[in-house]
Image 1 (spheres, one colour):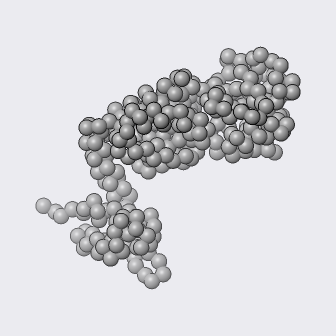
Image 2 (cartoon, rainbow, N blue to C red):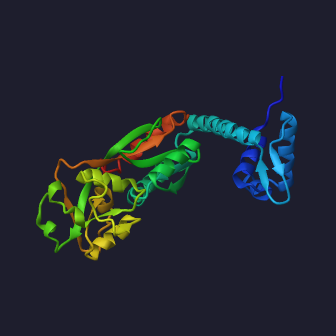
Image 3 (tube, rainbow, N blue to C red):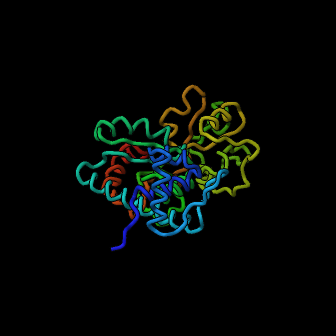
Length: 302
């Protein structure tokens, strides 16, 4: 029977590919540099190929080394899935869980959901990563995170999607704004030349445009913000109006600003909060359980 690479050897190779430095790769693997170097030499000897180009100035992988790294990542992820599957069968929602969340959801939903989640599942070690949707889904597909909390619509390709509830948009304006007198605003009444949006790359920007049925060019683009609190301050300083998700408003985003949140017409679209994960994960039962917990605190829940 042919001798096979060990998981440790593959982990050493992947770490070296990521860090391009023996010392840093060894630290990432909690090993000494000599141990990592010896492990890689053993792997090359076992496979009878050259995987690493070593010089005094830099470390490079050979083309074959790069190809094996891609396969090694898959092998390591599958091995982790085996361990997670065994753990989940004994104690659901326990151990390490890497949750990605977008910035327009995390600060407004997680403070409410994390305390009861910790109380119900004390053995769960939740690691959070906040980033924009596209990068989170890339990290999810690469196995860098386990599950992601995002807003739809967004292209999710082959991922499993569990909807948690709808989150309608509200118009945020100053109390002295003429729009403040309306009870429910029709979309046609919104002056798009005063509409302020988040900067490009935020899915909420696209959702807001869709809610108003606006083309990307039909809004103010001389002022943009990278966070909802900054957007709110711009409106408070009389620079325009904006659309905010109800989830953020309910969390107290407008507290102390003097701004009002006005409902849009019932026909206006809303974003959908969703939990997504890889279809190949062995933790589907756990993630459905997590979705149930999150749904209780989403826009459709409490």
